[in-house]
Image (cartoon, rainbow, N blue to C red; front, side, top):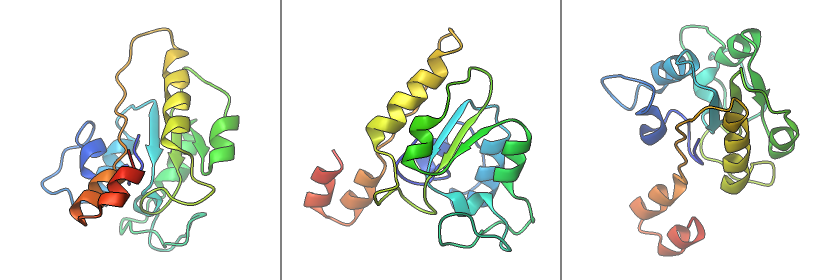
Length: 157
């Protein structure tokens, strides 16, 4: 889970393998089929074909025509798209919790906070009663650092 796109370098590195971090549509397909139990962040457009738009304004970027959100739902995933639906999602121990809250990084009133993302993910993963590994990234701090925006870095701490 991240406050940037789930297909960005850090979250993708844990479940996808590709020759370039720019291959985000390929990364999205790999994440969707990786057997993950929680996938939360931005990057919805990488999960949709170029002929579709989800709840976020950007049109999909997939050239293969696949709608990975629809495929995840068909496989039993719980799909959430705003803070309210994330908090309301009943905990399940056996299916993917897929939350795509933006086309790019999370922002705006409908986006869940990193705290809410983390709490829901821990609750979801704990329900199975086994150990788990969870990547938690406040990734927008990196964007602010690249832009030499000190106040933006502080805001993302």
